[in-house]
Length: 390
Image 1: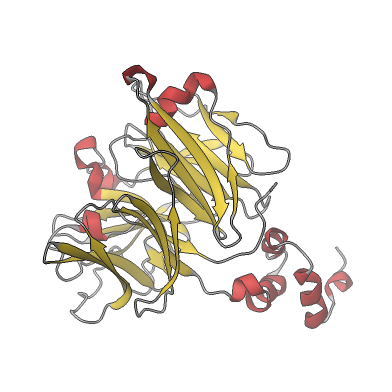
Image 2: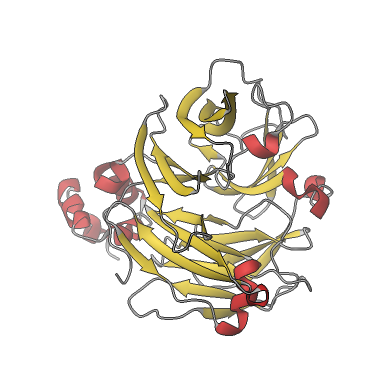
């Protein structure tokens, strides 16, 4: 394109960009550095600070809480999601650009009938919700109980997609199911998988992680990571870093997780003394050993719990969780620790210990009864953008 086509004053170009849908502005960030800076600095959704969203079950309720990342324990938003039946449960699949993807499961009254499964995408700010159609009937029973869902966005195509990766006892699958949100989408599609061993692990705590338009998951054999590009929908694979491969066994599945580290795919592996060793995938792609996080004070080797997922870092901060007990009640606290960049370390150089009293409080919630599900943390930005195809 001729250079003069871009020679518009900044104010004029900003006004043109503001006329576009939010999803289109995200794609126009890729044109050049000038356009990226204008979108980042002078459009409303980019001026909104990224917040921390937590999701967990408490006293039979399924809640999403949003907190500023500036500390202080101040709650910005709180949403409670109701189940369709008294025995159903709700989990969060993921967040993308202010949209939440939820997964409700309900046990059947018949032993042989398995479970029912409902996926929905919602914008809690506008109240818009879209319930996706069920997976194909022939795989519904197996898929409701086994396998994992993921929710992702491709920055170039601007499409939102929900993906289901099945788990099967033979440990290999030949297709994954994909649903693209949009006006013309009415059903799931099957995407062929030619790479061997593509079934996701049933044992590991790690969820499917979506980073920059690619979804990653650990195979059931726990020796490689599968990658689904949401643009061309090709499935490829990469090896797990050799130094941590020995710990990627079903018996040790809770000792490591796939996670997002500074907007890159990362592996956070628990050490024997309670710290977390970080590995990050660079652009070649190649695994680079990052810095090692020390155990926060008061956790005593329980790093599989304080290490939050599926997002480990928020800017220069890592988020940790702790519980405080008293009089039969529990308070749940979420704190952030300034750790700088975890990918500029010198071959796993240990960060200085996190001293007592320097963590910044993000969340301080009275948990009430002891019942508690694992808390998940996500990045969240409020948006008024309508759901695709709504």
